[in-house]
Length: 583
Image (cartoon, rainbow, N blue to C red; front, side):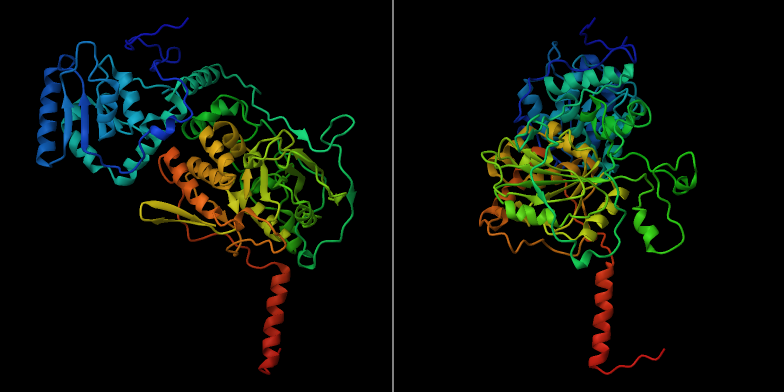
């Protein structure tokens, strides 16, 4: 039985909910109308909308002292005690405009409109200041509202101005960001609120489920039984190039990543992280978590927990190559290649993957859905090579979590990306140690020019594919389709927005060229202009730029071939200058 009431004094913890139910219907463009995070300080330092009949004499005296303190410091404020008896201060549009012009919104839980004021302050981008330690906030069983609100006991209200002024700019921005994040993912509209309520019930009842959305895949090649595991013709090609003759890892059968390993610990061990960092992911059991816990380094030497581990033993570099780091069990990665109408370039890229260790399978997403490739045969790999029909020419297909992806680690590349195998394996090692971040290759930067931010021309995990395809705002994916561009920017925005960490660059290269490519999106004169516009649009949707400026990366010192080349160069130099070595 559901009962709606404005009186929460008799609310039963772990049974009842204290939330505002009169929220708007779902609108995909709603985020465009919300206030950005910057500027931080608004016209009013603080605002209060309420009735003096709901305040005690002591509270009225405290407000008088608060206003005197604000006057002395010349901080502007709007404090209104003349709300009507139906608890409405101005119209909703007027209240939102006041909150949009306020850095802090003071709210007292004694007001019958407490939940409405709380909702509107978050919607407008003001930081709620709640004059009570006992106020019940939405979903506070799991959501830590201390990250986004300020709660003070009534006895300390005389110190309020000093307390608010003492908070650092960094802390205020983070609280404002977190308030916007909670609003978008828990309260914003009917769709979000319904999902949040059902997630709360699921966690209360500790119900694991496998109701995850699975994107159907359509085989590119027509087969007798319509199975995606039926292959086109293959041919054996040349062996690996000389620069990859060093040992990179064992040749073994494909290894799947364990799935749904946290079905029940989600309700305990991972509860806080999910609700406060990934609240959109609480509605269903997850195949993988973006940051589960690594085991101690000595676990690999213990028989009861060492299954699947490859301990580093004394010896040569072969043992080190077998142990790919991260204090985790062995695992493989899936390569996803998105292509359109470039068969020979795709074939060349597939050739470079021959013999690549730790590879589970290669999935090619063919976006030229009106025809099948004309190439008669493809390079033969030692792992399955699957061709999926994109059904439409959308760059968003690159990040769809197809059911054929059986690993947590995913290397998503373009069809013209020329990478050496040791570069791929090194990036995989780095990702295993920092699994909640994007690990990439070419360098990129974002810079501010006037009032705009411009852009000048990855291993990731399957969790972020789910977030991109099913939880990222739809208007971002629509914009990617409209411009046929910026899907990589959208993914970087999303991961940086969720993890609050920058991507990791793992090569010394500034960019990756494809000299054999006659046509490329990046060669288009307007390609980077569109990417500048993408950034402006994504910032408007996400309220700020989640990117971080970094001046470091992780680069493998030398491959075997590079090291031998350095030695050769040194010896050649010595010969030129007639330098002799005495041993």
